[in-house]
Length: 122
Picture 1 (tube, rainbow, N blue to C red):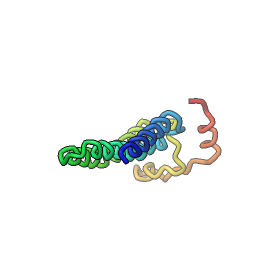
Picture 2 (spheres, rainbow, N blue to C red; picture 1 turned 90 degrees about the vertical axis):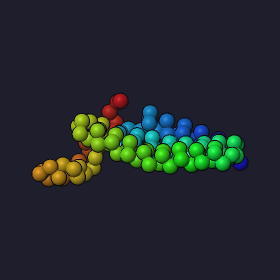
Picture 3 (cartoon, one colour; picture 1 turned 120 degrees about the vertical axis):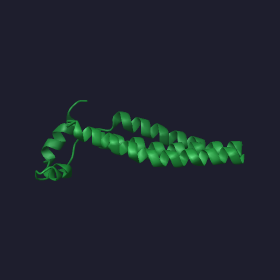
Picture 4 (spheres, rainbow, N blue to C red; picture 1 turned 90 degrees about the horizontal axis):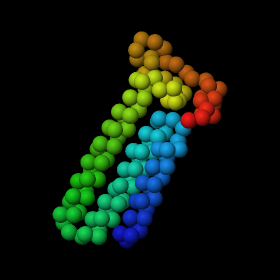
């Protein structure tokens, strides 16, 4: 069982790494890093807890999983916020809701400009 969890966890971490490298914009990369990476890490830690099978190892693995699931969304949010505040041109938003909070109107991005940005080289 532990070997299956290790292989599955490794595959999820691999998919997260490929997603960070290959996805087109900051928001998609942020999701790849936080969601698939967190799940893959959790699977690897559960496998390690099963292999060592001691109460201390299980407790440590559960604490690390809890810490990872608490901090990964915060890190993803900070990455998205940093990309938005730096006015990153690769940040492709259909509706810019934050712009409306600063006194202006919410900006709707046309699909044509989004398509051009997606086709642009990295």
